[in-house]
Image (tube, helix red, strand yellow):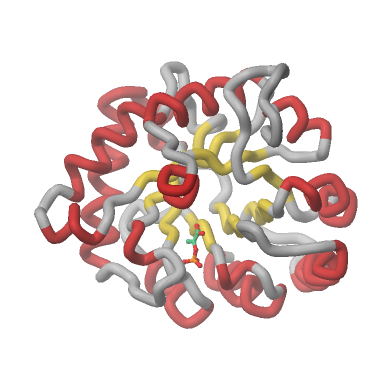
Length: 245
Ligand code: PEP
């Protein structure tokens, strides 16, 4: 198993003034027993990478599947690397909803990420209606199968389970519900990828805060968190990192 991972997704938040939060986070965790990752908007990636260097890894929030070309507004995997990134979040539910990204799209983006030595943080998660209909594991199984490319290893892919209904809502699944999905994901990934799946980090995401982080991290097959709102302020994200350390 690689080191546990505390990943922050700043979404469409952050300008140069917010780099002070990165300085503060660095100062709070100059050395850590866990991997710390921040994924800012593309406009801030290069500057954040300079500030975070050596202590905090940085990542993109999406990449295009193609290497270059006529794709106005998009960013390639190589461009993220050029801006200092070592990770990229792919298939976040907001991308799936706002931009109609399918599992096939996410798979192609993940292939581009891996080809450029980026670690892909592939997001999966059911909607509230799907959970209510008893379809959670079927949905997660389909997303895993479709979104993660052949040849994925524990070193190249991280999976984030993010129930759509828990993102930014303050609602969190029970620990039993989290364990059920994470145990299922480990079994599915092991069946497909073999031994390397034991090293694939499985993150939980959805309304993680310092107050609920410890119990979530003590849950079966949870190797860290993907954090949205609570990653924007160093003091709050630090509380989550400490729960993982
Ligand atoms: C996310 O954006 O991936 C997320 C989990 O958001 P929040 O922590 O704000 O629920």
